[in-house]
Image 1 (cartoon, rainbow, N blue to C red):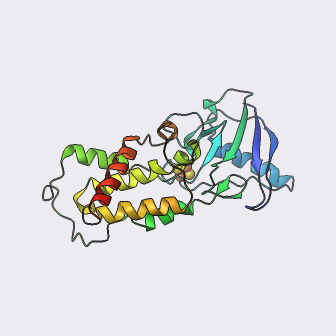
Image 2 (image 1 turned 90 degrees about the vertical axis):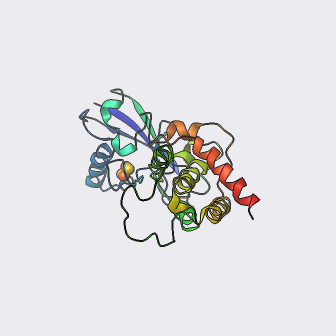
Image 3 (image 1 turned 180 degrees about the vertical axis):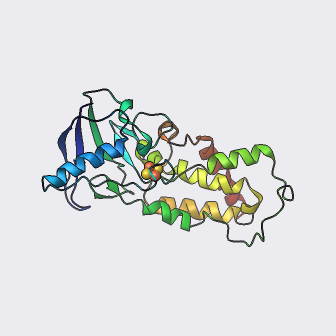
Length: 247
Ligand code: FES
């Protein structure tokens, strides 16, 4: 297969960027998207040119590092897929692919396709944890959790913090990410002790980082590789008002 890549190149955070065009050919349909970039980078290095900088770690859809906007969609067009889980057979032979970083004021570009997503880390540090001593592992039935809550908590826990929700949103809102993290803990007994403090601190940090507000566009859910539901944003709002009422 053959592709034309228009790739965003930006040498540093404070330097202007531009699109650079590259042709790649003889690509096997079973090559993953990141392997295709590896092949291109090997060629660029062989020509003593600077390779395209992109992020990846697990390459198994787990870590959320591979954040690339492909043809205007975070992680490309595949439903419920990270960039590393895309294969070139998902694209048309001869297609032109436009590659951009996850763009948001709170995610400054570090280089080419890599952005600084430490804003998410600081939101987690503000309250996305359980700090009470929950003791040794208990017998599975000793701490009853309603099945519906357990399922919703596990659905929310699938969030890998990739930032696709922010990149997809016209407001660069992080409310799906924060909603998933708050929901995960608010639905379980272990998260109950710090429930109010957690949601207030995480929302305060989210706003301090410069993320926008949700205006119910649903793009975040549509482009989330883990298909996290926007119902988590509704729960985030309920948790926030509940905490405010108890202040
Ligand atoms: S590299 Fe880990 S999710 Fe893609």
